[in-house]
Structures are given as C-alpha cells and as structure tokens.
Length: 636
Image: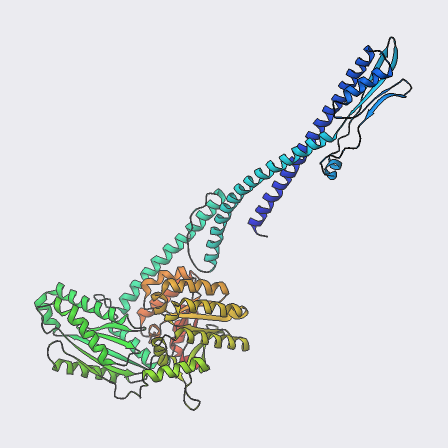
C-alpha cells in the first residue's frame, strides 16, 4: 500500500473513531443527566405529595383528589398511595405511550428510573407512603433530538476537517510525487531539479537530490563543452565553423560506401576568386569576415537536408554534400540566387567574387571521379565569367522513376505490405548480441532485388507517407520479436516524430504488445531528434513508459546540443560512421570518442560504433570505451 493511501486510511480511521467516540460519549452523558434529573423529580414530587396529604383530612376522596391534581400535570408514568401494609389507597397510571423514537435507540440508551418514595404521617404513626414514577418517553424524545443535532454538527465539522485534511494530504502528496518523479527520472537517466517542498523532511531530501543533480549537470556540461571544443578543433575549421577537409572527405566516403545511404546526391564546390587579391583589397580582417559569411551561407543551406554536410576544404574553397538530391541544376540555381541576393551586394569592390560548380553522383561511385567531375564543372563556371555557375548531371546514373511512378509504388507497398526488413547484428564487446538492427527494404517485384531505404525513404518523406511506413516497420519488428528471442532495433523517420497521430498510433500498437516492448529498440537520427526536440522528448517519455529502449543514431554532428541528452533518458547513441572511418589514423577522433564515452557513461548511456570495417578499427574502438559495434567487420 502506498504511503498516501496509508496516510488517508490513518486520517479516515482516526476521524471515524473520534467522531463515533465523541457522539457516543455525548449521548451517554445526556442520558445520565436526564436519568439523574428524572430521579430527583420523582423524589421531589413524592415528598411534596406526601406533605400535602399529611396536612389534609386523609379521606380517600381527598387523597384521590391530590393524586389526580399532581398526575394531571403530565409527564408521569404512575403515582400511587399505599398503606403501611402495601395496599393501594389511591393510584393513577398512564396508559401505553408510543414515543417517536426508534426502538433500537431506546434499547441502546435505556433510561432506567428509580421511583420517588415518601412517607405520609398521621399524628405519630405512619399513615402510608407515596410512590412517584415520571414518564420517560419525553426524555427519550429529547435524547433522540439531541443525538440528531450532535450527528449533524459532528458530520459538518467532520466534513470541514476532512476537507482541510484533504488539502494538507494533497500538498504532502504533491511534494512526495515531485520527489518520486525526480527519483524515477534519475533512474531513467534524466536529470531534473524540483522545487523544494515546505515539509522539512522532504525539503532536506529534495535539497540533497537537487544538489546531486546540479553537480552531475555541472560535471557533464563542463566535460561536454570540452568534448565539443575538441571536436571542433579536430574536425572543423576554426574561422568558418565548417568541417575541415579531412572530416568532409571522410563523411563523403562513408556516404558513398554505405549500403543504407541515399542512392544519389549532389556535391557542390564554391571557389573564391583569387583569395590573395581579396586579402589585398579588403584587408585581412575584412577578408575573414567574407569567409565567415560564405561559411554561414553554406551551413544554413546544408541544414535544409538530412545528413548533408558543408566544409571548407581549402583556403578559398567550400564544398557542400547533399545526399538524396538528384537535380544538380536546381541546387546550383538555388545557391546562385542566395549568393547574388545576400553575398555579392555586401562586397561591391569585388565584382568577380566566386565560381560555383555542382555535379550529381551515385552511391558506390568512385570518389576521385566525382571530385574530378566537380572540378570540371567549376572550370566551366569560370569560363562563363564573373560569378559564373555550372551544373553537370551524373551521366552514369540509372533510370530515375517519375514522381507518379514513385507515388504509385509506395502506395502499393503500404497497402499490400511489400515492405521487408533486413537484419544486421550489433554485438557487445564480449561478442554477445545487443540487438539486431532492422533496415527497411522495398519489394517492387519478386524477380527484382529489394530497394534499400536510402533510395525510397526520401520519396516516402516527399509524399508524406513516413508515418504509415514507420508503423508498418514497427509491426514487422513486433512480428519478428514474436518468433525470435533477440532484440530488434528500428529507425523512426524525422517527419514521424512531429506527427501526433503517429505517436498516438505507435503507443497503442506497443501497448497491445507490451510483453515484447523490452526487446524493442527505437532510434531516431540526430538530425530528426534535434529538429523536433520537444516532440522527440515526449516520444521518449512515452516509449520509456511502455518499456522500450530509445536511442539516437548518426550522433556526432551536433555535439553543441549534447547537454540535451540529460533531458531524454536515452539508453544508447550510435556514433556517426564518419567518426569511425579511419579511426586508426585519426588521433583527434580517438580522443574525442574516448572522452565522449566517458561523459555519457556518467548518465548511463551506451555508445555503439557504426560502420566498423576492420579488426583494427574494432580493437581501437573497444579500447576507447564503446559498448557495442556493428558494420562490415561482423560479416554483415
């Protein structure tokens, strides 16, 4: 039984005991008082009547008259005059009277009267005696009325006291709930502080827990800031805050070689015209401002695309990689419009400021060939004159379906269930299975190979079908869990996070299969998690409440927001593959991963390395502190 229920029970029992006890004591006291008063009345009337008869002629007529005079005043059960031998001389007796009082009440609070007796004298001898017994039904009526009044007032007072007790207990319960919620949140790896309750004992407890949370927060935030600074120093250009050449190329290579990446994409190269001359004309400080502004334009444009990346790959060259895009001409036109409207006008002294080239590419293409093509596009842009731009479509790309074809294919897949799951192992350091990572596949024809998620998910998002696809994937994962003992991890699209209907339907589906939720791992990309942070936070609480594991994949691009991890209660994060690519040669990324593992371990979050290709990488990552790995090295 909970503490609040015990407190309520104690209050109710105490109030009932006090109420019933007070009521009975009050009624019994009134009963005793009435009995005492009636006994005195019997004695007084008996003495008075005996004295009157003593002073009169003791004829039967006179005695009857005196007895009748007293009896007729009412409230008497019987009055009798007897001689010394006990024979009745005169007597009056009241007939049976029904009092308007419950019989159970009269039996419970019975009023027993003692008759009043007085002697009648005749000269020196005793003439006889008088016996008077009062009528007690009036006492019962008075006692019953008083009992009802007492019951009413005790009930009223009880209600007032109960209401006050309810307010007090509610305040205590609210304070207890806050402390319990904080303890539960800490148990779920979420750090939160609460207002200190007014109750001194709970106030001391809350203050101690808040102090602990604040200390952990401070240590976590300090270490997170140092990690973010390390990441920026190792992988980012200090002037523009864009990724440096090594990081950009590693990211590009990872995308090209990943089987789950988008089928196509566009890479853009922007080259400033004669950076040395720009320094001469503008001066070093103003030239730095120009570079920062160009970097900001590239960063803001790339943020519109999931898993996109912009970087400064040379002193005056900027690159943007846009996975999932297939129209390089559209990208060139968009960037050209942005640069002409916001960039050129800022530097009127530099009419020939930049050249822009873009080329489409396919997954699994040769990276040197792509870079050669984009250099060629840039050369063609330079041939067009000042601020020229040029786009080259990928001639080797396979036939692209029209939007109508994609829509028909996707709708058919949703309706018929032509969605499949491919499973890849995620292993702990001891070689045991952490879970099987499920990748969605689209089956267009039984005779054709399955389409990977990187190819069709951009179109799914384009036609607003992500929530239907994600629900179907969850159903497939639950079906897998019902047949196999291993846990399953699935990815939820960024657009589905912000869809309230999806979150509601997902919760219903999972509650119907609550017995399997502890083996279901649901993850969201870092891009989607932080783009819809509040919605993702609500989703985390809902999923954790059902028993699911929740994580973030492709983690490492937005480490400036790492502090938000403490609000989510995440179970794990999966590092972005480009942090793992070539880890044996990148001492900076080694230090970053080691320190990152140390800091997130303080809040109980597991770190999983993705895209591990070799045993050398596997050995180093385990030494750095990752909890589990996945990738081609496991024989995917």
